[in-house]
Length: 105
Image (cartoon, rainbow, N blue to C red; front, side, top):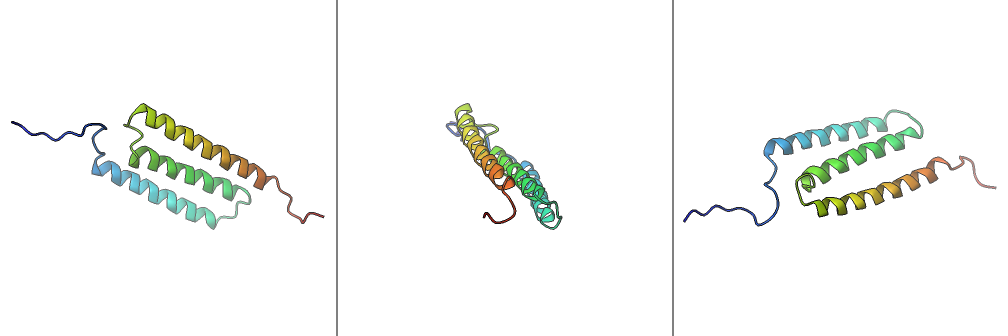
């Protein structure tokens, strides 16, 4: 009898080359976020760093959590959670970017 081990559910694991590509992309995004810390862009520093952080989070969600190839229900739940985090970040940015600089009298 041939014993071929196949998992009961879920797709096959990603290859080493895809892991290396994602790792390199995460390192490039890390260098970009460190680089933007030294560039004076005013309030756009925060927005650019949050954009870089969202890109890193999407890479981790899609490749390391295998949302790209897993069940549709898991993708729906993860995207709802990610959308909620984006709403909270957007509301926080709205509050921070519209504050006055001077003290309140």
